[in-house]
Length: 483
Length: 146
Image (cartoon, rainbow over all chains, first blue to last red; front, side, top):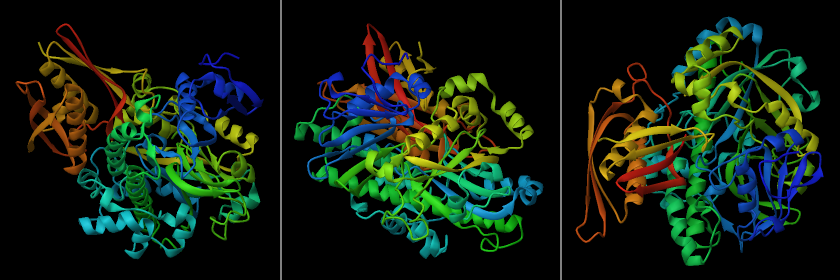
């Protein structure tokens, strides 16, 4: 098998590969990549270079990991997971990603495709109107600075207290939608000014709001699906992919500068400037952690406000109420985050960048309704192909710090995608295939064409065979909103 | 002669990258600014109704270009605008200790009905970031996170 690296890559099994520390000076632990042979062979050189760079960071524990949807990223690869000793290890903004707490949310309904299809145009128009997307979009929630700081501290619970959601929603959000330790005093004015008007907005790039259908044959594990309120029969659900918008990016940018100086102070050298880091217990490390938690909580709040708008849109179009339509939240999970988490072998600062928490059955962090099945894991595919719902496993708790894949991963650059397909044509083609798209930007739409992404089914099969998450259901798109 | 820019395909698969060139530092800054403006929206479709003047100072030219492009991204979100034009003036301290940039920026609040909007750039990154000089020719490589 030919790989895009000169390093030695050893086969652990059909879905797990290891690069030993001898392959790069400074590696403190092995690097491990979850991939089928075909996926490994197609991975770009950046994955191998970057996951081994991560293995050199001070205080790293056991392995530097990359998931099968991995590809080149800033510093860490997308799909990267790494755990650090909270006492002696580092925290790195490059290990969280610029879009702090970018994540996925899935909402169920009692509606069927037969009920939604005749009103789909109306529904998508209403969703497009209520959930702003694209360049410079602003939300309908007007906040002053004091209120925005409350959002930073309280996350999704601020939304519930202000009428944007149901109390039960909080049980079904990672960390109940609020990370401890959020400290707005460590957030710059620039970040606040970028974020204060963006609550309830999708953004652009690969972010989306998608109306999907779960058919009977799309269910792989009927019992687990039923525990999440999913019964198939062409059931309609709604998926949201977005994060902390410009606010989180500004926090990351601000602290990359702080960390470049801090590394000199603490005598840390890294293989790539975008791996800038600081000891977690240092003042700089704690200040970034406080600011990062503010951005993470704001992202939880962003998805919560969007959920409120989705419920209102469905209620208006179907002349009903969100409760009567059964619009319960299934789950909300981050895939760009750093958190202190407890495992059998201790407490670790786990960085996930384009990787999803996937806690197994029995985890005390899970709500009672999911403790027997494991944590729902939501993985978004391209807008043309579909998405997956999975659950976390015991194996993930032992092998990957409770982590798994997050999506399909790109295989084509944005520029190449735009040269290959035109947005207007893609819009027409998708409509012919039964997918109604509302997009702010035609060039942005072309960049997100299905041909620019890996086949998500291949990625899902890898994590399923590897045992770090188990397939529950496949969800097919019928309507999509893009920025 | 003014600067030029081109978008790069192969160095940032999930994001955007461009290379800007100019036969002077001023031309380089103009070209890099144009590249960012074109990434956000077609400037020709933005009728200017909004205006800001900015002054930035940094110890070196690499940092000044990085901070300037980052400031445009900040203004895009903070003021909810896309841009029509940025007129720039560069100057160096006589003792070489700092570079100064004066910018007169025009644009308009985001309006999808009137403007051709493109990518919502979230930030300027240090990944492969470089400003280089070859004789009179200046080149900058910039990766934008979208």
